[in-house]
Length: 309
Length: 281
Image (spheres, each protein chain N blue to C red):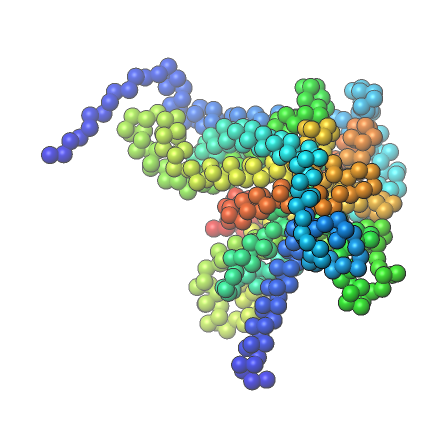
């Protein structure tokens, strides 16, 4: 004989009336997270805007409003435009390189072969290793005297020790170095993004295209690429945002040098705002990142939304 | 060219490509390993082959790290920061993710996107005002400032990740619990949370690795050596003037990087699912 359990009458708690209203319940659950980010992201963001319009320094903490004077001063400084240009070169150079490498890498990893799991794990390494630690490993590889890259080039007979490049001492090479390191850091991410996108394309779509006579390139660029664009766009948002605002590679590898050749916005903001203690100007420099970030994010969000419908 | 020859040529090109990619990605990591175990006399001899041990490997650098530097302390700091941040993140992000997933109105969607976007607000935009706030709170130069600040990026990321997971969880399970006499909160705690243990585990791993990887806030807020987390300590404290202790630096980097690398490899697909959210359908 089946025994059906009697429903146990539960004592009704005082909070039931409030907590059992779905809207209230949902609001209460989401509130701590929202409050946390409002207090420690929203508020500081507003504060940053205010600092940039004030004369605040660590040595003279004042809330005196100076309008756009800080921005005017920054724009009169010729080195600032170098910093701005460096930031764009660094960001888009490394993203482009990372995307190309990512596309090729994804293409290789798409096909099953023995040892693919291990290969994948090794290729993911640059994205997994903390960037600060990876950067100092690269710094050691670019070392002026003990550079393993130079050693290899010399051993291969391509260079002599006399004309071996000083990677971080030459303005152009230093920029190349930070671009390469950042591309190196992000290309595994691009690979995985491409892979995730490609495997999400239904096989029958590809088969149908093949039957209709689409060759390899047509399939790749007219069918697969448009279908994976939304996910690639998301990957790019992250790549651009994180690169455009990063200072760790520059801070550890070149300190903005030689002669300001690799100074980027984040680094310049740090130098001015924290090292020199000029919070107002530092905040103003940092805020130059905001319009670019907003444009990127809005563009990408619209793009994603349009593609989904 | 005959067919089999062309075929094996293509195979060779394929594996050559794979090999190039593996070397490209893993070489700096290999370089850490080699440097960490090389004797100094071997390391600083230009005539030696840099790629392999010319003299016998040594544990000298690792010993030095633990005995003569604050390395053990940095490890401990990172562990404490990681555990505290993870706790804060779980307490806030699990309910938030659940709530966002169950909201049926457009407001829920908007709120979700808002939380996601805060993840994109960069530390380099916030470190100046935050350093003032931290000074006001008396936390400057203390690792507790990092415990306070790191949830600003772990909460958005994890809420978004969990939202995706909870959306995939059939709402009928909770509805059944409610019919059986559970409150809404009871259904969440007794049904949804236990079923989401795998997702919560992912969140724990990612929160932990994100805090280990962070550099900008640590650099800005912490300058006393004994308060530094490991990433900052290794990359700034093992340099005396112009002298880089390369063996020790690489050994330290290796010890800090290995757990993160393993965690990423195990959870990468979820990570991608987390940040791409609804993009793949």
